[in-house]
Image (cartoon, rainbow, N blue to C red):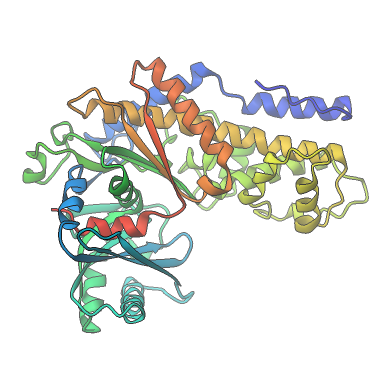
Length: 464
């Protein structure tokens, strides 16, 4: 465990900080156990959706050979559209990708906000069609084009272009459960007489893996570090006992699996939440669920830090006694993006002080600034190590699905890749370290940045 002792702090301040650091510390042995349990959960999830110690492991119709399909599309002039429906950020994103032999890819993107009064699946699909119309008019698209749709909800895929939102989805509005998104969007497009048809439907983590394959064809696993967390990998159909489609099950080509990694931790004997994690879970809208996600995802990291700061405040170990700390008392006011202050290495921690002044109207002493920075580092590094261990378990599963001994290539995308690079670096380092203990070849990582889903959705439309 790193030594977080702060020069100039009181013994009480250092003791409290040390106690927090010890509770957030994770050993290499614990990380190895976590990787093993993730692997077990993935294996069990391929047998049944109802395994108590299993992840949903939802089967997609996207195959590992999609990189060949994309290469084939690039041999002649072709175009596709991608639509991302993000229910967590209330946005839709559209992208077009155009191929022409011997020419660079042409990509256009546009972002739209989902109206607040959307209260039915039909209304959501109609809004998507309106935005598609706006996009093709803006970019003067006249020809008939395929549309790949991706959404940040779990899908039960019944075909390449048909997938219903899973009944057991815990993060979506009730009116979206069991809705066939492709069917709804396609019907809305027809009503507007648009030259666009849905040809593929995926979860965002699958489309991010497809986007990675456009640049790195051998990619066989993907990690999303966003408002939430998720991962995908390619599995051998013969190892998926629950697979329903006979043709897909008989295929010799690996198929994409949406692991729903956020749900890891439920019924876990390895995940060890602290009292602060339990507090956040208790006060959340889905208490008892998505346990792992609440330890590691963008949505929660800043709130964990805020809770630690308020405990320091309650112990009167931070900030002057007459400081107005009203804003700190409001939940989710310490945004995860603020945690980038842990990279401040200036002698007076200017960035930390500036943030506390601008965001919370708090004049912080140099010791206060060091405490806040240390808390950000403690929370962030624990999260990164836990994610790294989980990815090691996924790498092991992806490696077992391959016929060769080549290293597993993993893509990482999402907003945390840009707002918290130390987190990403620690995740990669931890995965490689744990992978060695599992006797795996060292995985290869490619960090793609914030948003590859929409282009990945467009590319998915080329899938055979």
